[in-house]
Image (cartoon, rainbow, N blue to C red; front, side, top):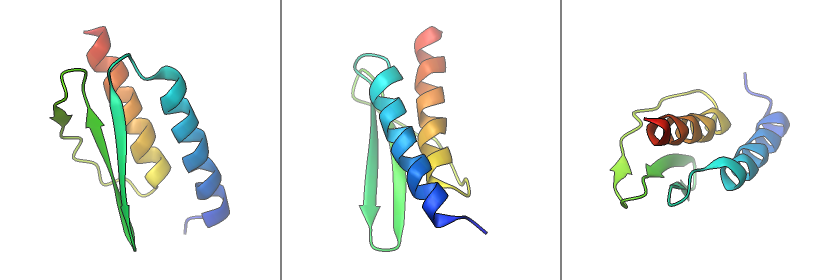
Length: 75
């Protein structure tokens, strides 16, 4: 079971990390609604990258998007 207070903190940390390390032109968009949320990674050309994530924690999905952006930019 997820510790909600810890996850809330981890989401904040992941958002701050995105602001610090995302490559120029890349965006992580969080789409939130009552009961759910999704993470969308947008590359420097404005294209949405399909992440196909189904991780347990929303913070993990944000971090996975950041890692994908960093890997794509390196190649």
